[in-house]
Image 1 (cartoon, one colour):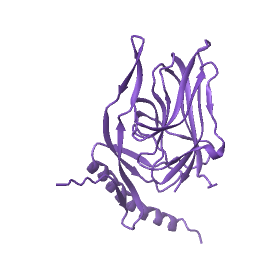
Image 2 (cartoon, rainbow over the protein chains, first blue to last red; image 1 turned 135 degrees about the vertical axis):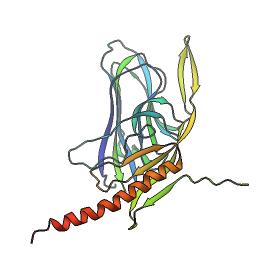
Image 3 (cartoon, chains in turn cyan, red; image 1 turned 60 degrees about the vertical axis):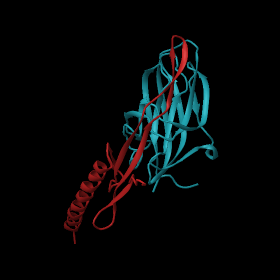
Image 4 (cartoon, each protein chain N blue to C red; image 1 turned 90 degrees about the horizontal axis):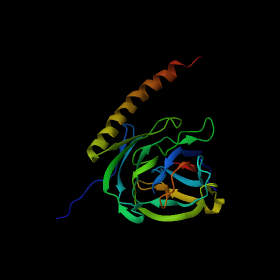
Length: 158
Length: 103
């Protein structure tokens, strides 16, 4: 296994969501590759049981998002190559990109939330390019709740 | 008659170091399921293009800068200006490093 140059997290925290949108988008640029190690969706204001569905997508075109800076997971770690941008790494899509593949999708009860935590052999590898997008998306519109969604990845910077 | 569009470029400093990458990025064209009067409807979003000028940071602790431009020429201009700044500051940093030497 190659040695990563760092691990990073992109969090969309406590945002009321009731539409089928991409909530987190990461662009792995040329000069880097990333491995998605974790994705998580929870909410903090609804106690009534209800089902919805989330999917982790490879995108061939970008979503238009709110630019957000990915946070290193340890002090002293180098800056992420997945820098923020409205057509790069960010949260809350207003225009949806084209889905090329959906390597993971699952229904879940909003009271419990859901967690994608693959074993190392099954982590989603994204080779850096101008179209190296990964998006975490509600496949259908969820009942309104204050959702927190997280994507974490290992980075292999060139 | 074929039309050639230049979509990506590398910008190097005077001494050959990579300063910036320019790439075209396709945006949108995806779909979203919305519920209208209780019935799910698929909406297709508009497509567009943007050019990314990625200004490579000389320090790994400082993130690269990403400039999102409407045209290839604008993106290239960011890269060229940035390469000039890198060259200018490299000389200053080299001078500082030698001045800080204590013998």
